[in-house]
Amino acid sequence: MNTSLNRRRFLGLAGAASAAIISPRFAFAAPFTSERKLRVGIVGGRFGLGFFFNEHPNCTVEAVSDLRPERREALMKTYKCSKSYESLEKLLKDPKIEAVALFTPAPDHARHVVQSLNAGKHVLCAVPAAMNIQECYEVLEAVQRTGLTYMMAETSVYRQDTISAKKMFKEGKFGTIFSSAAQYYHPGLEVLYFENNGKPTWRHGLPPMLYPTHTTAFLISVTGERLTHVTCQGWGDDSPMLKNNPYKNPFWNETAFFRTSQGHAFTGEVCWKGALVGCERGEWHGDKMSFYAGYKGVDVHQVFATEKEGTDDGGFKIAEPEMQPFDQPQWWKTDALPAPMRHNSGHGGSHTFITHEWIDSIISNRLPEVNIYEALAFTAPGIIAHQSALNNGEYMRIPNFDK
Image 1 (cartoon, rainbow, N blue to C red):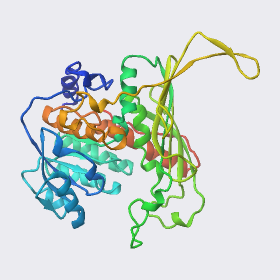
Image 2 (cartoon, helix red, strand yellow; image 1 turned 120 degrees about the vertical axis):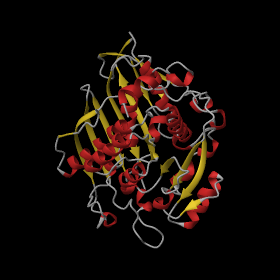
Image 3 (cartoon, rainbow, N blue to C red; image 1 turned 45 degrees about the horizontal axis):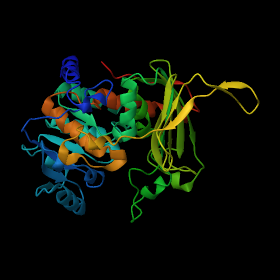
């Protein structure tokens, strides 16, 4: 794949529709008139149930797969598909399938992506892209070698408030974003550590920063900056629940302070335990305007720099920026999506956008927004951050996988 050529090709589509204003660096999927039907296979009958491939006018679900019969049945029912396979390996042998959507356990992602690319299939994969730096290189090599389309299904990129932040950034409303922050709080995650029979799942003891993309995407998808260095602290309480986990992870929560390629600050926090409101949210701090995505029950709002002055509670003069509630557009109602998909969906309305972007990128022969370079830029910082936490907050460099 000629990356430069593909970037120029789809950047040239900018302005084709209102959808094109959404991303600052990529011309997000615009209305498409092709009659082609992409034949896809869906693998993974839990998270994989939450997407809308059968609604896309350019997609046919050819087959589904899961190791468990009841999950295969659920996939067939959801996607109105009559063909199923007992494993990914069997599904990949189906010559009719052109592309696979992988919603398998996180530790399997890199192996399954490489396996699928080697079988000649385009790939959409759930997050994260990899669990260690070696796997990052393995997935990158497979994508570059095969020239096939790879996209990571990162939901935070397509949340309605993130889409608004992309638009604001492209229009220059922030001025300079000098710092930003994001939180992924999922208190109570330990309920997913074991199955009903007591067998541990892949989530048992999962280091928070090995699942970083719900934080890193809030910055990188908006500004395009790369995270270059990190220091991270972890917190654990010697809980028996964390004992003997396969990751040898002692932490429930991890807080990372990153330096960006523009010399800016980004704080990312992933927490599995505590008095925390469950959320996936970001905030962007600019010299002209700041934008705050909401927690549950807290309005999205903007803060604007003004010429006003006031006094603090000590009587000293201070600037008085103006805070305003933000009337969040529902982007899923617009022509950013094909008409049959203009409805709300999971993770802040993101699932229909992920589905459309992947299918359209393959049919249009262009890089998807969350291509391999973006996916690794989202994923690798968390891997290094966890190493930093294990090393008592050592300041560490993050590898860059861009060409």
